Image: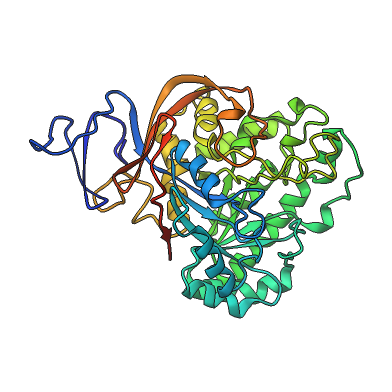
Length: 431
C-alpha cells in the first residue's frame, strides 16, 4: 500500500530505508526476499498518544510490555505522553530519565512528548531543544499530582514559546467549570453525566481562540464530543492551525451499551451515545478529524476498581494498543472505508502531526522501512490472555474483529511474526 493506493508491488529496502517501490516481479536476482502473498503491506502504524508510565509507575505499564503490544498490533512508532510517569516529563532532567528507562528495552521506535504545566515555560523551550516531539497539557485535573492542569493565563505564556519552536500543543480539552463531581456509583450514566459534552465544546472553543491569537499549532486529543466539530471547522476555515484526533473506543463503543459496573470502559472524556459516534465517523470521512490514535492508558486492576465497579473511584483509561488497527478496521469496513483510509488516519496523519512525516507513516523512497503486514478479512475474537500489555483488562475482551496482523517490520527487520518477537531493537526518535 502506497500513497497511490493498494496493489501488487515490491518494496526495496537498504540500510533500514525504503529505496524504491516497484513492480511485483521487479526483484533483483539473489537478494533476500520476504513474500507476503496477498496480505496487505501497510506503513507501520504511528500512535502519537500512548501512556507508558515508565519510570515511576511501570507497574501500570512499562516500555517492554507496551512496545511488545505495539509490535503485535502493527504499530512501529509510539509517542509517550509526559504524565503518569515519575517524574513527569516537564523538565529536561525528566526527559533524560524517561529516555534512560527506555534504552535497550523497546521493541518499536519511541518519541517523547514534553509537558506544559503552570510555570514551566522556560523548560518548554529546553525540552524542545532536547528533542521533544510535541507538548501535552490538561485544561482539567489530570488525575496525578505531578502534572497539574493549566488555565488560559498559563497558555497565554506557553503558546508563544511553542509557536517559536514549531511544536504542536496536544490539549486534553475539558473545561473544569463544566465538569461535575462524580459521586460513588456503579451506573455508567452517572459517570457520563459528570463529564458532559459542553465541557469539551467550551474547552475546544478556548483553544481555537488562543491559537488564532498566537499563531500557534494545537491539536485536540481524544475528541469524544461531536458538538466541538463546528468550532474546529470554523477555525480551520479561518486558517487556524487546529487539528483533532479521536480514538478507537469512541468509534466502536456507545454509551447505551456500556454495562453498569464495567469500569474497564471508563475514560475521560467518556464514551458517548451512538448518535455522537456516528457524527465522529462522518468527521473522519470529511477529514475534519484527521487521525485515530489509541490513548492507551492502562492501570492495575485494583485501580480500575474491578471488584466494586465504582465509576467515580476507578482510574480512567482504556488499554487498546495492540487492538487499535483491528477495532478501527472492523468498524470502518462496515461503513464502506478502505485500508487506504485506515493508513491515512493511523499512519500518515499522526506521523505528520509530530514532525515525523519525512521518516514515518508512508511506503515511499526515503522513509524508514516500517511495515505492518495484515489480512483485512482474517477474523478473530479478542482473547485478553493473548494481549501483550502488562495488565490484560480491556473492554474489547471477547469482541469479534477483522484485520489480523501477521508481521511487523522496523527499518526492514521483522520484529513480530505470528506471535513471536525479535529481541528489542527500537530506537528513540527525536525532533
